[in-house]
Length: 106
Image (tube, rainbow, N blue to C red):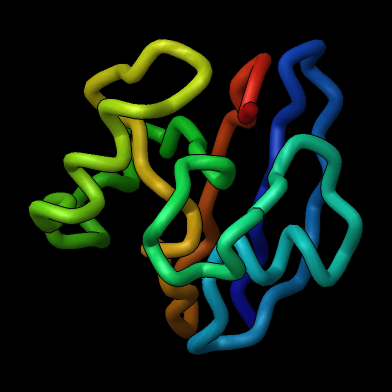
């Protein structure tokens, strides 16, 4: 069972056991992780699930597609080279993920 380590802007970490095939965003919303809004429900039409993915884990995922890339330009907190929309990060067996939640989502 993959684990997701959600780090809040103040440094507090919440560790959640996720289900393979679920997204980092849906795992956060189901478990009340503060700072992941997921306003569009994961349909890639908002940027309220923006996270900073641990740079060592970027290789687990394809680069953002055109739609995600466009949405990342609309984030409330400044985009960084490791910015991703957590609705686009699908949990896989045996891979734990570490994300930092930005200061602002909306």
